[in-house]
Every structure is written in C-alpha cells, then in structure tokens.
Image: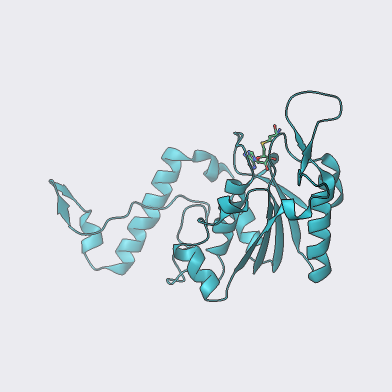
Length: 225
Ligand code: SAH
C-alpha cells in the first residue's frame, strides 16, 4: 500500500513514520510513504502557496495551483483509490474507516494550513474528507500521520502477532479488556486469578465479559450502534 502526503511542512512528517511498527512495515515492503513538499509546486518566485481570502476576513487560504500540479503529477504516474483532505468538517475517523482504507492500494492525503485550502480543490479532486475529532489543529500533518498509522497497522503482515489488531478496541465494536504483565502482585495489587489459571477457554470468557463491561461503562453508545 502506498501513501502520498502533500504538505507545506514535510519535516513535520519525518519522525512519525521512522519508528517502530510503521518503520518495520516500510522495511518489509508492506507500506510506502512518500511526502511531497507543496512548495516545490509553487508557481511564483517567492514559493508562496497561500493567498488572501476572497470576501475578506482573517487568515490565509492555500492556493489551488500548487495542489493541482502535485496531484496531477501523481495521478499521471499511477491510479489512486482515494484523495483525502484532512479537515475538521470531514467525517470523524473511526476504526471502520481505517479498516476500509487498509484494503486500498494508493492514497493521496492533502494537509491544509492557515484557514484551509481553496474549496475548488475539494470539489474537483478530493474523494474523502476526514477529521480526527471535534477540535481544530494548526495543520493537517498530525491528522495525516494518525490516519496513516491507524491504517498501516491493519495491513496483513504488519503486526507480528496477526491477531493482535483484531482484538484491539473498536475492531469488534467493543473496547479492549484490561491487560496485565509480570509481576503477578505489585504493592498488594494482584492480577486477576483467572489470567494465571492457564485455562484458555475461561480466560477468553473473562476477556469477553470484561470487554462488554468496560464498553457498557465507558462507551454505551458503541453498544447502541
Ligand atoms: N478553517 C478551518 C480550520 C483550518 S485548520 C475550519 O474551521 O474548519 C488548518 C488545517 O489543519 C486544516 O486545513 C486541516 O488540514 C487541518 N486540521 C485542523 N484540525 C483538524 C482536524 N480536527 N482533523 C483533520 N484535520 C485538521
């Protein structure tokens, strides 16, 4: 699977993909992440990619042309399943969206800045608009990194224990069960006996119960869905 991320701040995206699971996924050849500097597609000598908003008001707007040139170049090289714009007024990211995206081959992600991007880019090129939550950040880079992380860990072969993504929160509509590691007792707090019993069937039963309990307590909305 391949991601092409278009941003005015490529250096912001260096670290998130250079560690741990995301780094391993790239080394194994299961994911490719290409970051494109929007300024390379700026068409004026100052390399600016923003301009004043029509109709006045505060904040700058990202221009059409640099995005259009970069997207068209990428599209001439390969087909894309989706062109995603990260934006607070998009659909809120959830595990279902991540699952769906993990089945795609090639995805472009556009990162906005300032007040956002010219509406015509959204109208002409963008196929999905995704928000990471009801709050406003200063740029689309961190949201893009979140989407890429959530998606890549779902690609078969990326996680070493194949089943571990399946038992994560939201994957089956429930939150995850509590987890423990050694020591079995710490400052008088014991790990639930069932987890030390070695009885796999009973342990699974306990985990199912705990998932349901935790979801009822913390996210009853998930059960209504
Ligand atoms: N004026 C816009 C916010 C612009 S914030 C509005 O009110 O909707 C600048 C950029 O940060 C956006 O273009 C977007 O790419 C990114 N961004 C900010 N908050 C985000 C969020 N919650 N989810 C996804 N992207 C976000």
